[in-house]
Length: 320
Image (cartoon, rainbow, N blue to C red; front, side, top):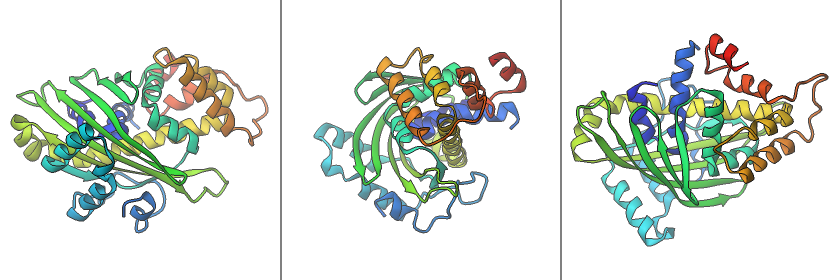
C-alpha cells in the first residue's frame, strides 16, 4: 500500500478507512437526511469509481450531512468534539452511494464490529491494518505504513431496516509523503438502508458515507494543495473495494456457511462471541439455499474465494 493511501486511512473513516489496503492489494495483483432520500436521484447499481462523478464536496451535500448528524442528540463531550471538527473541517467529501448484494445482518455486523472484518483480511494476508478494540465502540488502528489513530462510535441508531452510525477519530501520519508529521481529526457519517432485491431475490443494501477531515496547522497546506485531489479520487475507490469484499463474503456465507463458520474460528484477534455471531449470521443467510452437490465446506475454500481479487496467483498458491 502506498504512503498516500496510508493517509487515506486517517481521513476517510471506518469503511473507506479500512478499504485502503484492499485497493492497494488489488492494484498489486493486477486486477435528504436519510439514505433513501440521498439516493433518490442516484443511478441504481454499484458505483464505478472510475466515472467522472465520484461524490460531492458541495455546500448543499455538506449541509444535509450536518443536518443528519443532529448534534443535539449527542452527549456533551462527544458533541463538542464532533462540532469542532465540523466547524473547522479542512475537507468535506460525500462519497457516491454504493448499492451491493449483501445480507443485511452481515452488513450490520461489519459496521458494528469492523475489527472482525480486518481480522479476516489479516488471515487472508491482504492487509497489514490492525484495528484493535479498546472499549465498547472504540478502536486503536495502525496500518503498518506510518498511520496510527483512534476511532470512536459516538452515535448509532436504527432507521427502519437501515441505520446511521457516527464516528469520531484522531490520527497521525509519519512517512515520506509529508516533510512534517500530519495529525488531524475526522468525523464519519455512515448511512445504510435496504435496496430493491436482486433479480434472483438476494438482498441488496445501499450505503453512503460523508467524511469531514480537520487537519492540524502544519499539515493544512499539504492537504489542501497536494493531497486533496488524491483523497477525492481515492475515497470512492476505497469504498467500492470494501463493498466488493462484503458482497463476496455475503455470497460465501450464502453458499458455504460452514466454511465461513470455520473461517470465523480462525480469527485469532476476534472475541469468541463475535466469532460465534459471524458463524450464526452465515448459517441464517444460507437457510433457504440448497448447497451445491459435493460443495466443500472447508474454510480454505472460502479463503480462496475471498482473497482471489486481492492476491496474485503466487500468493493464492501459497494460501492453498
